[in-house]
Amino acid sequence: MNVIIRKFLEKDFNAVLILWRIARERSLPEFERTKGHFLFEDLAYLRDRILAKDTVWVAVDAQDSPIGFLAMQGDLIDHLYVHPNFWRQGIGRAMLDKALLTSPAGVCLFTLQINTVAQHFYEKNGFTIIARGVSPAPENEPDLKYEYRPE
Image (tube, rainbow, N blue to C red; front, side, top):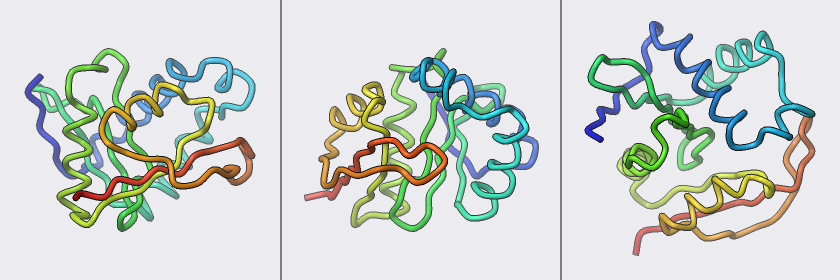
């Protein structure tokens, strides 16, 4: 799929909020059912935490509608989500390429150990596990730290 990755614009807010929730619900339905957040909590987190502290890009379709988003802090990929309707179409890889353009020495990220969808994606794209730990509150779930360093 031909996709454009551009900086987040205020008009993208609702679409990004929705695709973020849908992607989490699809990849971790039981976790989202038991430990997920209410919409108003996600809205506040996106506005007050992600957009306030991260550099955010969106992958958009031909109609300029967000179908994925990437949030980074330095070399940390803080969030990378693609709407499930667009999984396995190269959008996640394109967003990883954007992350590596931003941080050419390499990137790192955390994902929950129960998120096998994410683990498969990152390992397929050359990431390696460098640490195991526990995510901060409120989740407090076992997680993995991944790293990708170009050769």
